[in-house]
Length: 310
Image 1 (tube, one colour):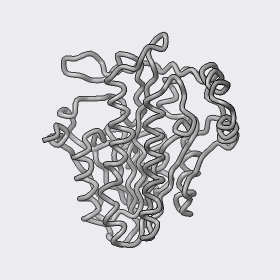
Image 2 (tube, rainbow, N blue to C red):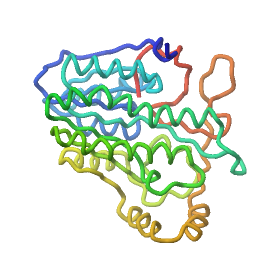
Image 3 (cartoon, rainbow, N blue to C red):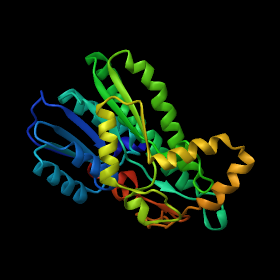
Image 4 (tube, rainbow, N blue to C red):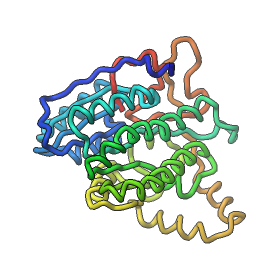
């Protein structure tokens, strides 16, 4: 059995009214995820917020309740994909989930002197950014198809459209998420389910504080969340921003790789501040140079989790 399946989780829920629209957001305890939750929160709306940090998740839940939303919280590591998928399926069976925002993510860079990424950094990004997102969405595909409605929103990145030399795994996970969304869209569209792939540029979140490098056209988390929610609610296939950076990427794709790659290497050097992660008896997860976003501050062993968050 997958070790993740033994992870325990804890759910806190308000009294739910089945008929009202219900959205699920992962990575909801800070940064873009918290901004998405606040943007969605209003009277007549129910939210299911998933994140790792219980205290910070509770704070976001209180903000959303103050805005009139009904809120259920779950503290969970999205790398515990079996547990995550089971929770999402159970939540949907209790009261249908109308929209899902697969937002949880972590990022890392290559090591000092551009040494290869640490294997732990690579697997953390793959399991969180790609496997975790798929485990969030997959349990909802058949129920949404059967109901003939639903919104799937995948939070990818412009880095998935223009890979950066210092973040190969992060870019690969986001490119994979873009491909996953584009493959799902025609399959689900025939049943009235929309799939929106969001490709934001630099956003001022917890990740940003540990990122030492050029961050052109950076947006606030609140501005990004408003843009993503508006796109999802109108059924947009993709939303990419900011436009100046999107335009540069499109132009860059027209330039031969031997000319483009040196420019990327020079301008977008990612030196991501290491962040100590909890372990029982082994070195920190980020022994190389991993930075975990606000919603996922520590990469704790799955067996230590006791609730559902991020």
